[in-house]
Structure formats: structure tokens, C-alpha cells
Image (cartoon, rainbow, N blue to C red; front, side, top):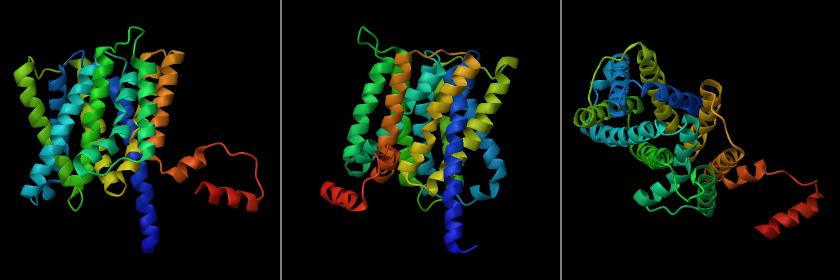
Length: 315
């Protein structure tokens, strides 16, 4: 296979990996909803990431011998973002429907350009500002009550979106030139340490899972954490932050689908309209303008000469 063919294969596989992240994460909130009835949030996250850490550490043990100081602090930053984001989202799921929580959390896609602006000084483009306006409209429609208030579960889901955006930005800025698998293992370990610390400080920690939670914890640890975040880190290495965000944002759509299928959640027309605004805001934020134009419905074909004049005039 020549270099161009190999590059194309890597391009395709990286996008498939990131799409699979969206599918897996979409299913995770339904599982979390049932698990938090048996295990406190920080303890659940701590067990989840501990198991994922040990699983990957065993499989990729030789890589741990190559760890450097620069890998450690990078893993700590990513782990801190993960720990906070998952804690806020997990608490939010206890107070809201999983599908709705997943959709509101997906605002991280719209927030990523603004987080990069904060840490890198690169101003968002006009389409990012338009996306933010669409996203706010969607949030108002889906979450703001008639008394102009927002319920705690929705507020926490929105807050978790900010920390997930911080995590994506951290991975994007810190993983370049470093072993992405090693960084994944390290961030899992640090996330587990931070979560265990918070659990012992704030919760009644018990390691007895019970039959009702064992399957959920194993699924969250090995599929939603070890596999999904490994796919995320590998996929992001070969994709732009914008592409990564848009593919992983399908989490919100799959979250609604799994919520309706397995938890029999019902969706009101206002809620669906709000979700539509949020999803369109993600598309506007993450897709390049030329790709957005391809998604718009085309008018009847014009003569080529006239179309060329129009394009030149608009430009």
C-alpha cells in the first residue's frame, strides 16, 4: 500500500473510532442512571476508572516503562478534567433523564473553539458565534421552564459540557508528539486517584457492588471507559479537534435513542425542537463552511455562467 492509500486508511479508521465513541458514550448514561442507585457518584467513577486503568496497564505494560515526567503532568491535567466532568455529569443524570443530560452535555462541541481561545488566544470564527446563539436557543427551549429557571439536573449537564470541552482541548494540545496510549493509561490513573480522594472525603465508600450494579460497573469500566477513551485518544491523534468534536457529538443522538428504547423516556415537541437547535449548532460550529453549504438544500440548477458570476459576486 502506498503512502496516500495508507493515509486514507488512517483517516477513515480514525473517524470510525471517534464515531464509535459517540455510540458507546450514548449508551453509557442509561447505564449510569441505573448504577447510581447502588453506588455514590465519586465511588462509581473511582471504581470505573481504576478498573479501566488496570486493564490497559496490563495490556500495554511495556509502555509504562517509557513514561517520562512530561507524560505524568499531561496525564494529571487530562485526568483532572475527566474526574470533574464525569462527576458533574453523573450527579446530573441522577436528577434528569439520561438522553436529555447527554444532549445538554454535548454543548462541549460548541464550547471547544472558545476554550481554545481562552488557552491559545485564537479567536473563534463567525460560524462559532452563530453556533453559540443556536445552542443557547436550544438550551432555552429544552431546559428553561415557564418561570425562566433551569432545573438542577440540566444545569449540571450543561456545566459538565464545559469540563468535557476542557478535556478535549487538553488532549488536543498535550497529546501531540506523545504516546497516546500511554497518556490514556495515565489519565485514567489520575482520574481514579482524584475520584477516590473525593469519594473518601464526601461519601460513604463501600466496595460491595451487589448484583444490581456489577454488570453496569463492568460495562462502564471496560467498554465506556477503557475502550471508548482509548478510541478517542487514538482517533484524535489523526483528526482535528473540530472533526473529533462533531463525530463524538453523536453521543447526544444515541443517548436519546437508548433512553427512549430502554428507559421508555418520552419526548415533548418542545424538547425535540430544543435538541434540534443544539444539534444544528454543533454542525455549524464543527463543519467547515464548504461542507455546511453541501448540507443545505440546493435550488434548481442555473446555467453554469450565471452560477459562476454569482459565486464571484458573493466572494
